[in-house]
Structure formats: structure tokens, C-alpha cells
Image (cartoon, rainbow, N blue to C red; front, top):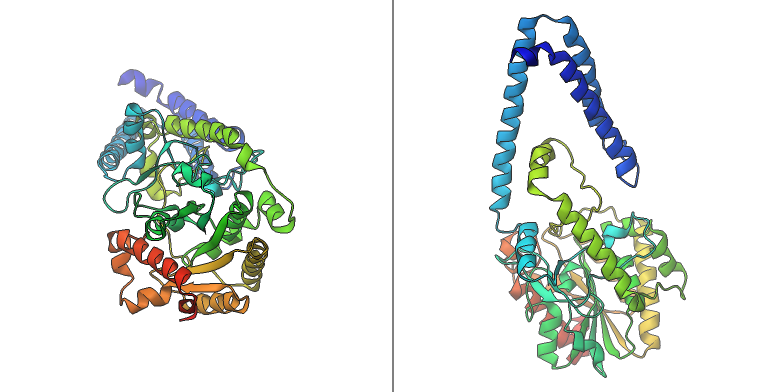
Length: 430
């Protein structure tokens, strides 16, 4: 104790300077993009610690002793609380990271979903629109179990032989609801449609997609064998996602250049290699001991903790009802996307359906305006809001009876409605 107190001020100053330099390194060198704004409070804290450490050179021995006791007590309390938060996290049934690590030890050919919107603010020479190919893929847990699927040759949630079919009955475009979160086959929308029609169905949905990412996916993986193209729109966050997507250079090329393509079908190996590196790096960075030492969980309570590179967040997010301001730009962009989609579908002599999925916090204004736009474009509008409204409750068809993805019954109703519309066209305008 006496030795520590003797060099207390020197040690305090040294640690404060190291902390400042570490924050500077993380914000300006380690992270690929500048993060000064994010690290603003950390810079202030480290700077104050440096000033206070200099001040301790001028205080007496007894005060230093009290400061040391108080400091050690605070640090001990912090780590006790961090230990409690870590224990709670480890024992959570929906901890996808731990589940992934456990499964990967048994089966090395296991991966997790990485949403395409993760790449929007990156500078990679490719913008993947799907996941890793031909691997057992862990999706999410909202129904009491982790949903998994064997990805196809392009990294989507399909039996791979669907791509070999001579005729495709349904071609699905959408976000996590279309993707099949958080249920297993044969309970996702695409699988139920396969069962009902006894025909091939291609599912091109992926987590967190908005209309522009969906349009890019539609263009890249367009299959001329498809008879019915089904665009599945979710009112909870699609317009919010669209506002972020229109800022991406590559996605704008899909939007503005009819001939633009990344040729992703022949670049799947490149996509797999990139995703494998990102996921492995994420696993390394999610080391429990390192996270504990850095008080990651405790800091996340008081600060908006921004995951380090890579930033795809190995724990997937539930769909959130986001009140997006419906601007004329939102509407015009969505209208143009649907117009371009319709043009390509009609040229292929196929049909186009627009499926409107309601959220728990139904936005009637957005609903009416979007429905009016789609109807004015003479695109078949499948109104799932009316379907669920007639059944008196949307909540009972949502996982865990809360704001999330649909449960098995909810997905079944959506698929059955789409299938009925495909048989009886008069039902479209009910």
C-alpha cells in the first residue's frame, strides 16, 4: 500500500495518458471511418482524468490514501455489476452468439445471417445482397428456439434445387418477414406456398431490407421462369430503411441505370470469403473476458455503445415500428421502384403482387397513401391489414405476443392469402 501511495500520482497520470492515447487510436486509426463524435465523452473523461492526476501531485499523503480507497471501491463495484450483467447475458436463451459458438464446435459448416444493410456505409468493392452459400445458417429466436436453415447456392433461404426448376410459381421479394424470421421450414411464407401450390418457390427476402435493397436483389437474381412476383412490404420500417438506402452509391446505380449489375451470381465465392472474414473477426471481438475487462455491458447502459468493426451485430434486431415522416421523396422513390419492377415483370409476361404487412402500431396515413399509389399503378394489392383486422387481433399472430416477427400461424395466413389470390384474381380487390 505504501509503495502504491508513494507513486500514486505518477501511476494515475500514466494510466490517464494511456487511456487518452487508446481512445485516440480507436477513434482515428483502428476504426475505418472517423468516430470523433462518438468518442466525444470518452475524450472529455480521459482529459479530466489527466488534469485530476496532475492535481494529485499537490495533495497530502492522507488524502491520496482516501482517494485510492474510493477509487478501488468504485472500480470493484463496476466489475461486480459487469459480472452480474455478463451472467445474465450468458444465461439468456436467445443469445445467438453463444448458440453460434456452441453449434460451430459441433458443425464447422455453420454460419449466421448478416443483413445487406450492414454494408451500406462501408467501402468494400462489393455490396452483397445475401448470406453465405450452402451452409447451415442460424437466424433468430423469438418463438422459444433458434430458427435455422440450409442456405442455397446464392445464400438465400431456399432448398438449393429450387433454382433448377423449369418453372417457378412464386418469386418472393422482401425483408426479414419474407426471409422467414424466426421460424423453421416448412413454416415460413415460401415453404407454405410450396406446400399449397406443390410448385417451386424462390425466396429472395433478407433481414433489414428496404425497398431499394429489395429492388437491387430483384434485378441481380431475377429469374425469367417465374410466373408470379410477390413484393412483400412491411409498414413498420420499410420507409425508414429506404431513407438510408438512397444515400448509397451502388444502390443508386441500380435505381438510375437499367443496365447496372454487380454480377453477384458469379461472385458468390467472393461474398462467402468476405462474410467468413467478417464473422470470424466478430467472434474474436466478442471474447467474453475482453468484453468483461472493457466493461462493455456496463458502458452500454450509460453510453450508446457502437460495435467495432465489423458492425453487423451478431445479435439480430426485432422489427421496430418506426414512425417515418412520409415525404414526397419517400413516395416518389417507392413509386419509381415499383414502376421499374412492374415494367420488368410485365416484359417477362408475369404477374406482380404487392403484399402490405401491417405493424402493431398501424400507420393509417401511410397505409392509405401507399395503397392508393399501388392501386393507381394497377398492381395487385394484397391487403394483409384488412385480413388481420377481420381476425380481430394482429398481436396473437406475432411472436411472443409482442412487437416482433410473425409466429407460425401469422406466416401461414399470409401465405394462404397470397395463394388464394393467385387462384382467384377477383379476390385481389376485395
